[in-house]
Image 1 (tube, helix red, strand yellow):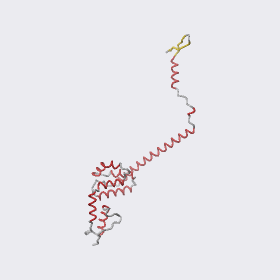
Image 2 (spheres, helix red, strand yellow):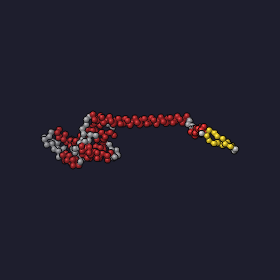
Image 3 (spheres, one colour):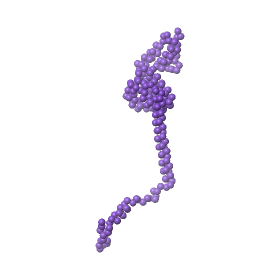
Image 4 (cartoon, one colour):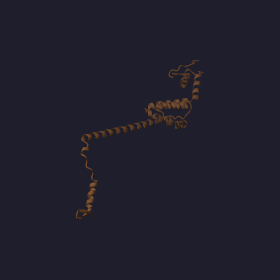
Length: 215
């Protein structure tokens, strides 16, 4: 391929333009010259390397901590499951509810269950009416600030220990008589009912037996 190029004021001549084209293309794609003023110094390079190393160290520690937290939660769930705890089915019987909550209190402490895992583990053991309640109320409860195991127990008592049941238990406590029971049997009955009548017995740890007779 040839192109016409200017020779001078009196005429023209032909030249091979293929080589010229390649040369121009090579010039177009050549990398720009590096400005020596923008070349990083050894100190700047060392600082960049140090910052990168610090970032990688922080990232690794964060990932490790997240993995450890997840493993701790999984391990706690397995340790709880190994004890075969009972499920709570939603009975409106304060004795059943309190026994279930007290058992999980002791179980969580025994297996060193992290506080933030306790609600998630406990709700796995809710069945029937209790599970239905959690499905409908759980999302709202979880939005409460600092919703934890203690708050979960309060919500459970509010739902499955309603006012009419509280009134029944208080009446049973108020009208408790020995009625042929031995002193030990009467004492056990008193202690059993006292937690359900806290407004009457403010100190559960040292209830004062009423109308106790040795006859």
